[in-house]
Image (cartoon, rainbow, N blue to C red; front, side):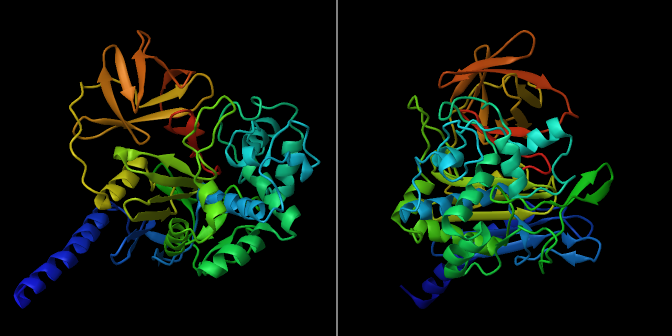
Length: 453
């Protein structure tokens, strides 16, 4: 090879990341000096790390976001709580099959196990919804802590279903898991994870919002749009474990790298990303604090996050050497379409899918009649549609979302089933409270309402 040819090859290698970075900037247009924004971190095997920041961290004091800005990560936090429980299990200080009353005697005798807290199969109701609907105190309107959550959960007189028979996303399980960590280890979840994970891995900018009054240098303020104005929307609560992780995109990439390399040990690494199973043998696309997805046939391990005005995304494609971390301080800053667009910049190019018939006219939003889960139908400029991370295609008498066929009824409802679970989806108009948005079958949801994780 000539020297000129070598230089040419090197130039091509260096140009590709630069072109991808330029395309990355294009995904965040509209975030400037008068809006909240996001920080983004991209790590690819054998290539330089990419970090970017857009918009403002503090509109009142004119502070821009930076790659090192600290955000709240919402439900991305759950995998850290799960890893703490798994670490104690690996050390034989607890067992995943233990009844939670062994550590939480205040709880009713429902027969819920520690593991069912982590897989969202406990049947426990979400304490935030309970406090809002029954007590009249929505989250962020009153200061809640872990003791508040335990008191609320211990007052539940029935479960949504028998433990291990269904899946429903609930923050309660992860708050209770945080209390179990404290009672078993003698350390708060914040202290335990700092000693076991953050310090050894070099995650020097990561902590927990266990005291919302504490000053955190470099933290972005969270915002929401209200009409033509922007207002602060901060999580004024001390309950954590379900959410509450304060971190940067750089630290999240360190965490992803540690999981891929197995640095937490074989037991924790395997169990953290092992698909949960229901008692009837059905396998879920949720593990322990992590979703397991197959977009475009690729293996993706991920979780989203949303608390007050913060929104977040963390994913890794272990077989493709890609990690993506996105942290934002605006309620509308991180739609699914933006996440997918960023990931697709760095994933292997996929062969075009076989043509499918055009979907029928659909509403933008549908709600599950059974549990209120929301299905958001997103229509692209080319006419294609998606729901969550799944393509929506037309079939005879209805649509196909992912691998599930739904019949379009004369009244506009969609009807079908997934793994034996029946669904009836009812068209909804704008202006309803967004509680949970569907991510995948069966019944995989993520909370997106401000104040939820």
